[in-house]
Length: 514
Image: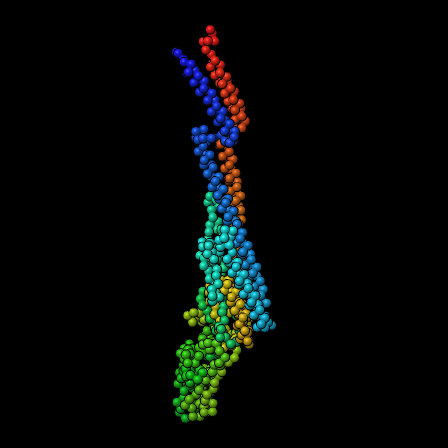
């Protein structure tokens, strides 16, 4: 075989270049610290390293979401803490104001402070995060959630959305709460039902905000104060002596005839109640039957007395007698008529539902418990005939309305016992509504704290997982420096040997042997 000089030279050059490539690769590995420089170096390892790198990047994004969620939740927690402090201060003012020794001027001064607190509450409800977005606007982060209208009311402009951030492979955490959930979805009253006095009440009755006793039956109930009577039904006892007279018994309420009875007529309590109620539009009086007792009350609050007039007609001598259903002993021509007057403070009560059915009744005692349909309440003071209170299922009431109602009550002049009772009823409602607002804010704050703890726990789990991924990635792609340094030395020697060999071979010619 014949080998040319050019072929020998090219082979030598190729050997040196190959050694230089190998040396350069080891130098790159040492410079980067990575064993796999291209997928060709280790296809399986390169694929695994790519998957691990992507997993690390995703986990880093989770950590970024964790930080963002925690920042928003910390801001919300701070705002809610300020709202709680504000409500505590307002409650203190309400307790101070609910004092009979204060003058109208004193109450007006407290009202001005409540108005200032309303402005502060509006500011807190419009808190922004570090990106300039509103915390309590739901998905409408760029829209101011709460505004005050020209009429003085407050409007929510956000929505009910709640932003969730992915903080782990299978875990999302709410990074905020909507203004509806925080400031508006608060049940008024005691959270189950609420009490309201009639604005026309003339007595000094003050109703307790009540508690739930047993199973509550949702409905709208009316507690009506009136007069408990001793009326028994049965046959009317007309007695005719001497001359054969045609005797009749007449029953009038507030001057209007409600029932006429001839000798031998009979009337049950239920029928008497129906007779009286058939003329309610004329008399302004309504009757209720419960537990064997008939209660009379004005159809609307007022100071007018109820008069029940019983009359014996057709008598010609004093021997003709009758005893009326309301106890009047009517005698012949000398005392043919007698009027029973029910006036002043009420001595009994009935509770009706929305359909008008009586739920309970009894003799009125100031501060005594009144129980029905899962409701327990009481009325203190001296309510008048016809005074009434409504007990209805609790509804959502925003905190702004609660504070505004209190301010309005404080700004309304108090005159007389009825005015004082009206004010006390309003303040009792306000105190109960404030307590409900505080409880709701505390529940929300507790939820925010729980979410902060959850993302802190998730952050620690993400850190541990990231470390594990990075350790595995290091095992797959990181360089063994000791082995690489040894290979570097070997490649340097190989390159030097190739260079020296090439130099010697290049100098070999026939002229060297001539």
